[in-house]
Length: 222
Image (tube, rainbow, N blue to C red; front, top):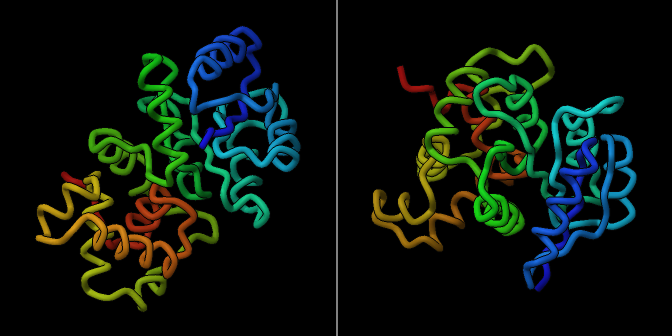
């Protein structure tokens, strides 16, 4: 199957570069381009791409507002948002996690990392390396959300095994790593994680991580 990608970035040259790179792959294609967040939302509703490659800093409606609108749209349940940002400086990353973004890439990534990231997010996995998870969560998500975020009540229906899986996911571990640590099969791990996502109303694996830290199930390392 071909992964359909929408590019959202106010820099035309960068969009053109991404298009050439993405269209050079047999399993990827660019279906539309947007120069700002409002256009990204409109075109996403028209094309229903598998992945929106979203620059978080754009004039007018920025990538954060666009991500929130896309993730809140029930008709776009199968569309994943991959944020382009800088891990160390962009404090909007935490808010993007909260609203359901599927992953994050810095603009200095290699071509292979960009293409791999698109495929990872399209598959439903979170694009959060252990290092990125710890630095982002410790720096931003440990700060209480001032909005109407989730409360510890979202944990009430989790089984002990599901709680364990969520904590391991929040630590940046892959399904294979969790399976080895918990002496389970990767399929069983994925089943537990998916059930936890459903119970915690997390759109993506990345949002599951955010909620886990917000409600105190997971805690940043000292």
